Amino acid sequence: MKQTLTTLTLFLMANLLLGQGSELALAKKYEVVADSLSKIPDNTKAILFRKKALNIYQNQRPVPFEKIASAYRGIGIYYRREGKFNEGEFNLKRAVEVAEKHLYPTHPELAKAYNSYGIYLLTTGKYELALNYLNKSLSINRRMNLPGVAENLNNIGIIHENMGDYVLAFEHYKEALNYNRAELGLFDLATGNNYINLGTACLRLDRYDEAKSYFDTALLVYNKMLPKTTPEFAALYNNLGAVANVRGDYQTALENFENALKITEKDLGQNHPDVANIYANSGNLLLSRGDINKALAFFQKAYGIRLKFFGQNNHLVARTCNYLGDTYLLKKDFDKAYEWYNKAILIFETLPAGDPADFAEYKNDLGYYFEKLGNYQSALKFYNEALGVVRKHPDKQDLDIANSLARIGNVLLLKSNFKQAGQNFQQALLITKEILGTQHPDIAQIYCKLALASADETELALSYCDSAMLSLGYTKANGFSFDKVDSPLTLLEILEKKGKLLQGFYAESKFRKWLDEADATYKIGEKQRHTAVGSTAISPCWKVF
Picture 1 (tube, rainbow, N blue to C red):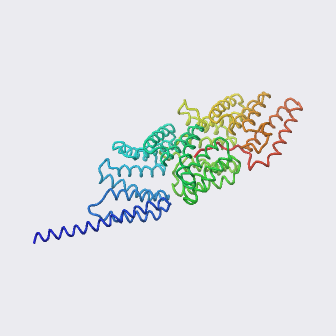
Picture 2: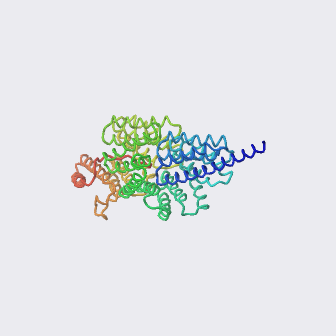
Picture 3: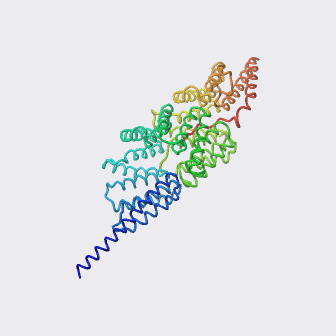
């Protein structure tokens, strides 16, 4: 009788295992289908198939905890890509809990769970917590010599970049590239992505030629491996646009942003955070070109998307608030400008970590608001606070420092402190020329300010005006053509300021030559004004996203 029961038990177990084997095979097929759907991408259907696989795994005995953790992780990743962050967090956190409780401490799936949850935390702006999980993943991968080391280094680099430590970000990106070049070679998507990230770090470090070189290498990789309608190309176009814009090549920048937007909208729809990124960059470009209303529409779209996906307390939301402040200030809607500027600062101050350069920018722009209202004391207060933020590293000379110096110079100029204003502008000019070269709208604007600070020295002031126009490419060689000037609004402003200087020279000397030159200068400006779009107000400095 006992032998019969044993035989029956073995028979039932064999059938159970056979049934489980077929179910496990079905679960595996569901996972393959889910992965394929996610690449289309159709993350909604991918989630359904991953959940079917998870349901099978949860009913297996013994319980395959590795498979369960992996299924939760996959579902969480798909939700994150869809922008459904609450659902994404639940599943990614569950993957970590299962892996920590049931897998050994150096298990590859635990490393993957830490990495995926870290990416979610990074995406939602929780940088310090994200760094903790990504370092845990990196520790396992390095100890066990697993293939996730390069991805960990890359993600850690992104966190440091978002927290404003661009040098440390660059070092992590470079180490990730070395891993991938050794393991995968040049022509691999992971390697191409490393070059993209190295380029973005160089953008932040104001090393624009180096950034362009990295982006060009990524383009070489992508051209060989991908069709031009993929998200990778969209990211590349967006970054190439940023390089072109900061160099003052606005037409090239606009073309790249348009290409990025077409791909991203088609791939992810019109309400995805990646689309918001391109809206924000395009808005800044349009603002610098003087198309204020269109820029406002782009910023409002970006703000709506980011607020929906990330909630109020997020660095990208704060940054968009500041862009809206810039736009309303140019529209002379001072109440709305103050509201958005103040909101950006308040959000930044509530968050645990962020890029100090962003904080300095917010303070600078609020200072500019007070400057426009004639409240110079408050303007100087915020400008000096901004300079203090960006000068925490005294050996570092970058555009943020130049920007703060120039803004302080503006207020000193308005207070008729010409000598000290000129000193600030000279310092700003040296830094900006070293980074941007000699031809750029920002250079032109500083020369224009130097001319105003040197109004008591006629020839010097006029030479600064000429240098300003040369730095925009408005030269005899191109026939003094507005069509060949990248920033016609800046040129119009310079012509207007030069005219006022000449009128001032005439008022003091009654020398008819100055009045005639003033009249001729104004006529050039009026004749060409129709070639410029919108307002002639100075645009805020470009903000690389």
